[in-house]
Length: 372
Image (cartoon, rainbow, N blue to C red; front, top):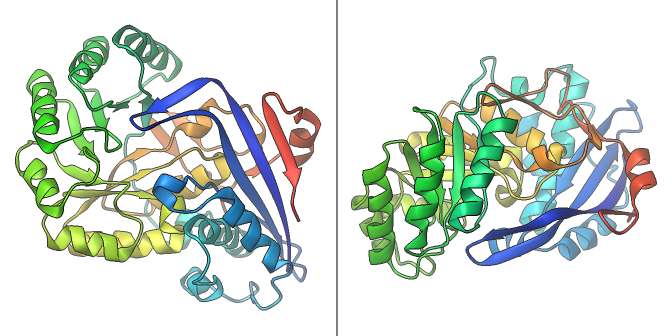
């Protein structure tokens, strides 16, 4: 089996901000695995974000250059349950994710099944959010109006919190614009400086609207007791995101009764196979799941859509970043009536128009470099 990899950078039309960082662009490592015996190709993606995934784009490049050829992976006969055996344990989380996604794509194409059908014969259908990043109250409301116009039938919105008193006004402005029954996710990205402020601001929001379904990662540097105190003093589930990358992380939080849910992101977990193991652990411990993303193209987003569709204890998805990207990808999962719909083609059902990307790369809005 041969491997190609490409570094891709997309520059945002306007900067995007969360509580601890502002972003001007997103970076992705795109993989193309070629099974030389069958002629089947599989796409994968690594999208590192060091504060959460604990690795970098440079880590991805280093690992994939070491691979060169993957002749020891018998893709003509392995199943999805065998994938972890062929991914080096020493690799970083998003490097593992890139290989895992590409291998799932190849196995799905070999079996003639969408990736979701490799795990389940039934499809889980849950609302998908569109995210509002941190802006002032007026601009937050304007963005909500734009989202409601662009995504007909939208059922859920994620609102990024800054971690201060202004969050109440920002959220209230969005709530006032949305139809009755709209669901909201509050995501602080560890923005609150102490648990008392987090509890106060979140409870003011919860008193104003019953539409909030969960709160993500309220504070930075929390002890397990602090997290449990917040969980016990709000009326919606507390979900862990940044604080859960591994099974050990999840086991520690569950044992401390500090969370009610986990945000699974294919990239930070190390792929679909690892995410499936995390979902099984969550189900055994009555922990709810959402499936989220970082800055990912339709390749990795599609992996998340397929995983969520095949996983019963997922209550909501936040797979939206690719909706803002130019149409440089074939088979992007549809956003229909508030849901992300998995592609029914074999494998992921999605792939980049590499020649189109190469032709459009000019260094201003998009850059593409072949690595291997």
